[in-house]
Length: 570
Image 1 (cartoon, rainbow, N blue to C red):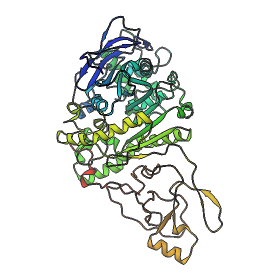
Image 2 (image 1 turned 45 degrees about the vertical axis):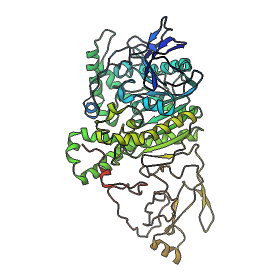
Image 3 (image 1 turned 60 degrees about the horizontal axis):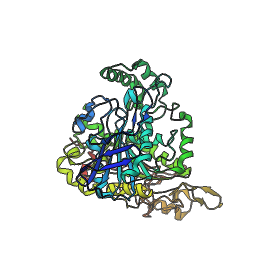
Image 4 (image 1 turned 90 degrees about the vertical axis):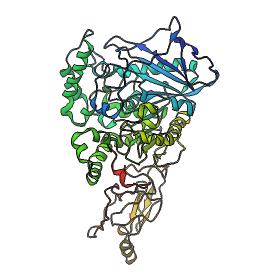
C-alpha cells in the first residue's frame, strides 16, 4: 500500500518521488532519454539524487492549429525541445507485491501537435476503475522528429524517442507495480499509426505484447517519398542554432509543399520508410507478417471519422444545417473519406495479421460521446477512454449537457480496453457504441457445391445464393419472384456480430440486404452484401428503395434516429 502523500520509488533509473492525487499516485515528467537537436536519443543515466516527479512533461515545439482550437479547450503547457519524458499513473491502493497490466499511451496529433500529459490524455478513470498502470509518453514532432534526409538528419527521430520510452518502461515499470511482461501499446490517430510502425521497427523485440490501434490514418502512409523530398527542399537546411520560431515557420513551408500530393498532405509529417528503424516501404507488409505472432492487436475506427472537419470547414458548415444536405455530405463525402483514410486499411491490417498467425480483433465505433446517437467522428472515442470532465465537457465533442452520457458509457469502453490489455481478448457483447469482429485467425473459405454438376468451388463467407442463380425451373422462378434466398452457412471463425469486410457500413450479422434479384435474406444470420457470382443474362433486376440514412446494402443493427445524420451539430 502506498500510504505516503509523496511516495518514493526505488528503480533502476534511480529514486523517484511521486505525488498522491485522490485515488491515484502520479509520477510526472520523468526523463526517459536525452537528445541534442537532430540527433538520436540517448538513455538518461540513473538520477544521483531523488528526482521529484511533480511536474507534467513539456510538449514538443508545435504550431497553433485553428481547427483544433475550435474543437477543444485551449490549454497552456510548457514547451521544450527536450520533451522526451513520460508520466506514470498508478492506483493509490496498489500493493508492493502487485504486478498490474501496463498500458503505454502514444498521443496523436498528425505528428505535429499534442503531448502525453495534456488534460485530454489523463488516465485517472482508466487507472482507478480497471487497476492498471498507465504510462503517457511525449516525443519529438514535426521537423524535429519526423523529417530528415537520413544522411545529415535522421528521418525518424520521433519514432526512435518512442522506442527509448518503451525500453525505459521495460527496465523500470516493475518498480512502480507494473508487469513488464504485460505491456500494451495503445494510441489514437497518429499515435496509433506510430504503434503500427513500432511493430516492425528494429530494436522493439519484447518491449510490448499487445497493440491497440485506434483510428490510425493507415491510408495516408503509403507512397510518401516524393512528398517528403519536396518538403525537405522547401524546409531547407536547419542548424542546431536555428531559433524555434524559425523552425516552426520552416515547418509550415514543408506543410505547404505537401499540398499538391492529395490526401497524404493531410498528414505531411510522419514515419519515413527505408530509414532507421523502419524497413523499406516495399518490405513493410512482409515485415508485419513476420512479427504477427508476437502481438495481439485490437484495431478499428469510427463510422464517420472524416466528419470531424465538417463544422470547421466554412463551406460545409454553412450547408449542413439542411437535413437533406447533411445526409448527402455524410454519404458522399464523409463515409468515402473515412473508408479510404481509416477503415479499409484497418481491416486489411487485421486480415493480414490473422493470415500470418497473429490474433486481431476489429472494432467499429458507431457513435460519439453524446446523448443523441450522432456519428462517430475522429477523436470521439477519446472522451470515453481518457480525460476528465474539465478536459472535455463544453467542447465540440461533448456538450456540457451530455457529460452524463460519457459517465454512463465510458466505464464499459475502459473495461474493454483493460480486458484486452490483460488477456488479449474482448468478451463484451456488441452494443450501441461498439461492434466487434473477433475472428482470431484467418480461415480458408468454405466450399460450396452447385447443382447439378456437383463441382466444388470456393465461396466467400456468408455468400448469398439466389434462386435466380440456380438451374431454371418453375419453382426457382417463382421463388425469385417472391424474393426468397438462401445462405450457405459460413465455416469462418468470424464472430456473428462482426462487420463484413466487404461491407464496411454493415454493423452486425443480423443485417439484411437486397440481393441481385431484389430479394432479401430470410435468415437472421445472413450478412449484408450482394453475391459475387454473375447474374444470368436476360433476367430483370428488381430495385429496392434506399433510405438516405442507411448504408447501401445494409440495415443498421441499432435504430438510427432522425438526428443521427447530423454528426456535426454546432
